[in-house]
Structures are given as structure tokens and as C-alpha cells.
Amino acid sequence: MKNKSALFIISLVALFLMLGFGQGEKAWSAEPIVIKFADPSKADTPRTRAAEETMKEIERRTGGRVKHEFYWSQSLLKSGDILMGIKRGTCDTGDATAVIYHTSRYPVWQFIQLLFIGGDDQYGVTKACNELYDTNPVLKKEFDDQGVQLLSTTAITPSIIMCKTPLRKQADFQGVRIRSVGTIAKFVAAMGGSPNPIKFYEIPEALARGVIDGTQSYVYASHAYKHYEYCKFLLLTGVNHIFVDYWINPDTLKKMPPDVQKIYLDTWRDFYLEHCVKYHDEERAQQLKDFKEAGVESYRLTPEQLVRWKKVAEPINEEYFKAMEKRGIDGKKIVSQYQALYDKYERK
Image (cartoon, rainbow, N blue to C red; front, top):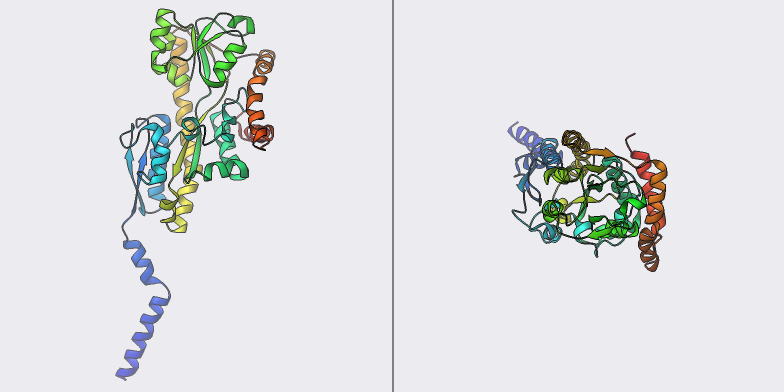
């Protein structure tokens, strides 16, 4: 009888182990995976608030199996070093702004800096860029070849121009000195203006002293630096649209169980975008209200004016298309795909 009882107990234990209960108990009691996150900006901006809440949501969705350590304001790595820092494992994830800081590594993705493509909607730009990464083999390869995994792009509010005088037609640019860089500087020159590439922090003094008459900027940046004290005309029609990008070390991702990996990637694509856009919309609305109260006139180009501006921009955009052609890449097809996706996702 005792032998039968012992055999019964042994059988139960064997069944217990075969069903994986022991493994589940081990996984449940394991220490959480701690992920170091680095960001060049301070906490509690619209973007960084959304990023932090996204990672807190990941912790919630994974039942605490993932935890994050936050390093804001370049406290772990300088802005230009975050991409390689993620690759080397100095941090596990972060905002690297790779396409802007590392242009030579991402020549194909430079299409995002072309003039008057896509549109002004942050949600539409971000959705289009994320989907291009998922569906365009050339763009996906260029990102993946750097040895880091994309979590999400993040469209910054469109580039705008603040000026002491309104800029609606080409004649309005004649002799106007505008702080500008990159493709926008080329556009200012093509319109007959005088581009000046001074540092961004030098703009308020340059405006006050009359060294420049206006500046390429973003609504949030012009608000922070109080450009409205000198410039009373704000062109809201976006000239171009850049994005920053979040990445994770692939080895860090592989350490996670498959279900946690999926949660991590999915949360960055849905939760993050929803909250980032919400916070940016709220901030932008308040800042435009502040501009109005400061006597700033906000305006947009008419459809006819926009057509003429685009015509002037065509030779500048053509430089990118020719550079891609030399690489055997159809740059115009990429821009066409991007435009179609933007039109699909733009909030009307």
C-alpha cells in the first residue's frame, strides 16, 4: 500500500513538472529586466512626458517584468553620442535623433528634410514614417544596418518662419535676412533672401540688434526663446518636417521573453504616439494663444502661394533625388510612398 502511495505521489510530481508549473514559478520570481533610458531633453516636455508614461505603461502591461531607469538632460550621454551609446550598451534605449545628428549614416532617410512634402500634422508624419520603416526594404535596411532597433519615430512640429515682416510672395524675401540652415537656407536664398546660419541661442540678440530680420524655427522653440518680442509675423505653413527617433539595443530586446518583446514594441507604436500627439497639441494651442496676446499675426499661405513656393523648392529637392539615383535608389518613389501614407493618416 505504501509503495502504491509513493508511486502516486511521484507521478503527481512528474505531471506537475511536465505542465511547466515549476518554470512558471521561476519566471514569476525572477528579477525584472532593468533598462537604462537616455534622453538629451529634460523631463516633462510633451515628448519626454509621453516617453516616460509609455515606459511606465510597459511596466504595467508586463506585470513588472520590465523596469526603467531614466537619464534626462544628457546626464548619461551627450545628444550626439546616444545612438552609439545604445549600440555599445552604455544605455539600453533612448532618443538618439539619429537622422538629424548622423546624416551620413542615414542618407536615404534624409527625404524627411525635403521642402513642402507630407504636411503639418504630427500624427500623420509619425504614422507615415513608422509604416515606411515597416514596409520599405531600403529604408528598413538603412536603419537596421546601424545595429540598433527602431522603437518609433517622432515628428517634431513643422519648421515655421517668424519674421519682422510678412512673407507671402517671393518679392517679400528680397533683402530679408533670415536665420536658416540646411534645405531651408537654400530655399531662403532661392527666394531672394539672405540666409544666416547663426547658432539658435544667438537668435534673440541678433533680432534685437537688427543682425537678422527673422528665423527658421518651431512654435515651441520660438515661444521658449521669446522671438515674438521682435517678430510679429508667424508663418504657420510648414516648410519641412523633421523627426527624432527612439531606439533600443537588440541584445536588450532579445533578453526579454517573446510576449514581453511584443508588449514593448507595440506600446511604443500605439500608446506613445497617442499621448505624444495629445500633449503637443495642447502645448501648441496655448503657445499660439500666447503669440496672439503678444501681438503676433499667425497666417498660412494660400493654395496659390504654396504652389509658387513649391516651384522654387523643386531644384533643391532635386538634389536629393539625384543623389539617390547615384545609389540606384528611386528617391521620388520613396517620397511618393511617404506622401500617400501621410495623406492616409493625416488628421483632418
